[in-house]
Amino acid sequence: VFQQCSEPTAGSLVAMGRDDSRDRSRSRGDRKDDRSRSRDRSKSRGKDSRSPSRDGGRQKKPDDYGVDTMKITDDDAAFILGKGGKTKEKISRVSEAEIELFERDLILEIRGSKLQRRRAKKYAEGVMAQRTGPVSITADYDDEDLTMLMVPQEAVGFVTGRAGNFLRTIEEEWNTLMFFCEVGSGRNKDYEKLAIFGSVRGRRGAELKVLSAVETKVPGYYDRIRDEVLSRDKGKDESETWGTDTMVFQDDELSYALGKQGGTRKKLERSSGAIVQYVGHNALFSGTRAERKRAREYMKWLFEQLEGPVYVDGWEDRDDCTVVDVPSDCIGYVTGARRAALGGIEDDWGVLMFFMNKKGEYGKGRGGSEQLIICGSKRARRGAELKIMSSVETKSPGTFTRGIREKTSSEKGFDTDRMIFKDDELSYALGKEGTTRKKLEGAAGAILQYVGHVAFIAGTGKERKRCREFVTWLLAQRRGSVTITNVSSREDATEMHIPENCKGWVTGNRGSELRRMEQETGTYMFMALDERGEERLIIFCHKAGSKTEPTGRMAAERLVNEMVQEKLRDDGGRGRSDSRSPSRGRRSRSRSSRGSRSRGR
Image (cartoon, rainbow, N blue to C red; front, side, top):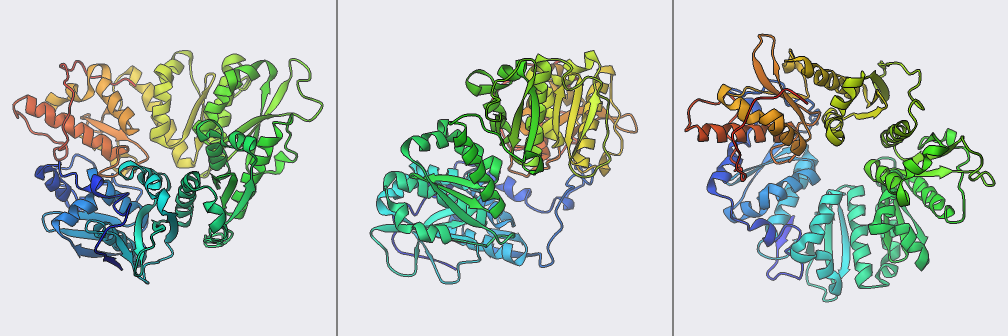
């Protein structure tokens, strides 16, 4: 599919070029480590500390699932792997295939459906081809996963960024694979072609980001290719309504629509679900018909606020709006100085919020309330709504909790449960600056917010149940050891048996090391007893993670193994670890000796 040309073009070694993949600083030991961990985990349960079903939640394999292999050279292996394995992970993400690199045998193994394997192989060949020159794309390159964009020669360096950093940032944001290439024969002195691989949405987001940068460097370029850009991929999504709408701004309107550091644009993009990008003075909205409609409406409401109060007629019948009645004496507290508090909630949840007033009623009366409208997806709106309720309750206790009772919903889909705390339980479940609440929320995958003494838990049935369990176990730890049985049947837990002489080291003084690892990996972990009364460490998280991801249960497991091995080395190798194979990473910071083990939060 890809061929190599004799001489490189400007920008051809970007995105995953030499700066990324020629970092040969990793030791041979590290490379062996990559190989040793790349086979199916189910083959190496032996002394595995985890209980058998810890990789739960895997998606069903497609009917045409299979395995392909590619023989590569040692130099190719460096390019495919990339710095810290990032390039391999990127190819895997964009193609949606599983990829393993066996460096001893110099074999690349690709698993997935026929289309996933074909795409992964194509991307890998494209990456390898960059090592010796620009990539040349032949006629059979397109699997409905490619956008080709002509970039003016004078903008290539600007689009690429220093050492390819700008393209790499776009790749990560939109889950795409991008590099400059040649198509057919010959070169064009005035333009270079940028290949963007990925999904329809990912390619579009990346393309518009590049176009925005090009327009900054070469004003008027967008007008020359406008028709081609607007018609691209029309109707080529699952809803068959994919398209692009436009709007033209005046100078003063553009800065308002952009917001500080692009904050307003990002807010509109996240809340509407559409891709919102500004190319020169043109606003482009790409997405399904419903997403584009929402983006245009939100933009209209945004500009109407410059003229005076805004009221959304018929908000009750919309599926993208939630309205909260905020007492008048709490509005300043909820809004914050220069809208900082409200803006922070919008950033956290990806919603659009503003106070609604009908014309002529603005600021009427005291002791009443005003309506705050929240626009966005169902989950995001609920998260923002509960945060607003929490703020109001702090300022005016009882507003939302007076006479409220506990509730456990039987709904399997999205709903909200409630748990009522006693006075001494609330501060414990909240933690310093809310760290414990955020930890439980992240590990459970649910929305957890405290409104007064009431814990509101929002999410799917599984998420709510998991979060209730986490809160219950947290509170139980104050009274002593917690017993948790049947962990092997759970899809959200990893058990680790820690050698007796390593337990204090792993937990740290008053649980400080566990808290550090929890924060780094987004997990919830503590020592608990099994049905036989034996103590082991359990790592809880709805996200399993992967061998290279920095978050999830596997990341936490690696950090724990690191500490166990370090302690065993410090003790002169005395004792053997029941936990998994040693982590190869090094710990750079020194530690003072660890104190007592903590089962606290």
